[in-house]
Image 1: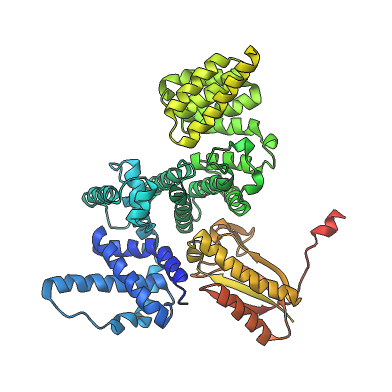
Image 2: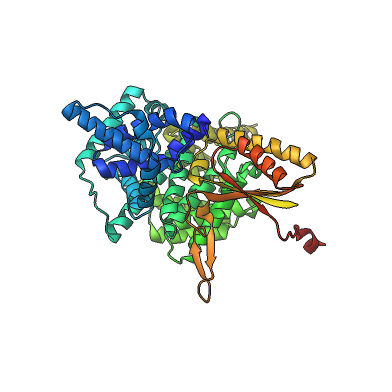
Length: 417
Length: 126
């Protein structure tokens, strides 16, 4: 198949494994990336002519490895490159290599590649940028555009992150079972960071693509660790949240709250996959925070209309999450469910003690304002909404709160008149 | 003669298609489907979710073992199928060739149908 779109998709799909294997050979990220790049260029040249190889991943690893070794030889001894045909005609060697690839290395190579992007010294934005560049193969201009920075600045940020990673001394041997599960947890958190960078970006389409990339990485990870309930949970969580993408904003880019969304715009395919994964995860009886969050998203996904939402169960699940992962943000989210089940007074009482820790958080003041408004304390609600607007991260967030404020002002005017 | 056309492809690649690419492929397949529908040759067709969402019941022991994931770890996975009603294998092959032209990569297995049970949910409702 010589269709350029297919070749591009095949190169993208092969990237994590091929790059992971090349990283294991060369133990140097730049060399591995160059080798993969060389292999891709040769693929674009030879696949349309000779047809695609039986195993594109094995082909890319083999050709990449040869190209990099040639590079090393060329630098050291100025020897001639072998002719193109001898590299392209890989049928026998490809088969042998493909068999070895199915072995134990395969999983650890990809996990290692993902893991080096989660170095604890790297700030979140650098982890995200590094993963998108290295693992997903997004270009620097693509990533720069999404983060609204110049290409030069993003290039520098990625180079600096790579420098940190190079010094980090990642072990290249097969990890122990404990190391493997630690890596898996770090990688899961990094993938969710990538997703949230996209999800929280409002309706910026360049950033919105991150959600799709994160889901692709999660599916890949789940293929490697088919029995890990938390990876099922993470994948389900992102699928269920991403399923609402087309309903989350109106035509002017304004936020549409969950309860006001047109549920026919939710992506049924993503929801079906997410629900199937939660069902699978639950069978393992090893609950974790991603599974609980996915179960929360599933309760929303299962409600045909907003008024069908099972708020009591949502309250209970947030209770579970609070015990697993105590955090003021979780309590704040729980309060929203509590407001529905037991009324705004109880919800307000729940969030008031969080003021110290969440005083700088947009959603805290937004939710608090909404509870106050429901309780008829208009003046206090007004103050809370003002605080929220000052802290809004995106224009859409600010616009949403302003809508509440406008309503308040209108009602005050009506009352006065 | 009824044939099932089983669609195999590398799901990593298929799920790496951009939304636009995916839509373009589905649109091209729909054109083939439309022509087959008009000719009265197309039965049920469906597309499966990724194998990561699959569960397998292994009957190698008693009671059968429930395993996460697909039945077999293969490079290309079963991603969907078409049921067609055609005169002979040649015609089934020509349908598969049309589908292949619309959908890059992978392979189609053309397999004669032994038993066909139509959708019976409507009967349960009545």
